[in-house]
Image (tube, rainbow, N blue to C red):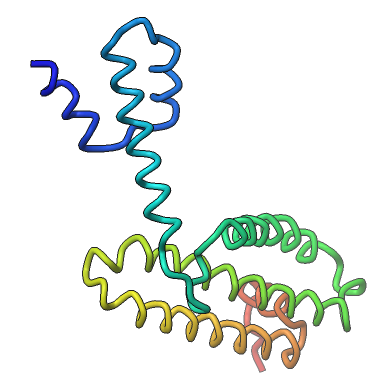
Length: 174
């Protein structure tokens, strides 16, 4: 029956490219029905995420968090190689410490937001009661990451850049 045919579309939402493809062939009643069901599924999915409770620990809620997460990723991908390949004579001192603090802030915030996405997506599959503790753990992990990277960037010789270079530099024998 035709109802069995549409059950396939009700079980899982369609991908955006599939919806576009179905819209272009609107001559068929089957396609019109599939587009209607897909729109309903997409609107239900978006309304369920927008009603989610927001808290100070939920670093993954809203468009700002997503935009910030992507901006931090782009910053790290561009700025890190530029500073790493700049000669030490240009980056020693305040530039190195400033870059180190910027990296410490960006990496810790990036991991905090990213781990909150993981907590939102996967922790409820284990237990919804664990979402709060997972967010607290993510915040604590981000804070420890920030403190550790900040200490390296401000106190160690060479800062973050020196620590990364040290991974490839052979140990000097005394």
